[in-house]
Length: 178
Image (cartoon, helix red, strand yellow):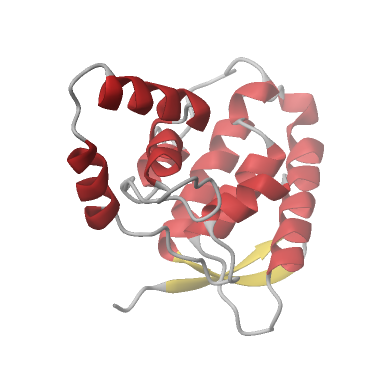
């Protein structure tokens, strides 16, 4: 599938970025801008853009690579949520959050948080909870609650393994490096 790309200047460095990633990053920047007081806004935004450019450069190994949604999410995770910059001073121009610009969430089996098949690790990642809690709950349901072991096996078959990104790392591996 073809995607539209843009050339953007972030922190005095030119990057090629796909349109979805650009929309997500722009919404994130606008959300931060709306939370900064007018006196500090320009300087803080320059610092944030410079740090974003550093993160992109660290993760793009060759000249022709494109900044994608995965890399923008990684940068936002490193920089921190827009809420950490305080209360909004005004409503942002683009009222969509970065989450609304992201791709739909999908449940995958985990590549790294796996005991048997990665099903519990993948479910825990999908719901943003501790994988040990999911494993304990699964154990209790299988042995005491009537949940069949077949349900686990069917999920093992039906849930795809988490794909690797353009950088050869799965989401689980990137998350564990932080």
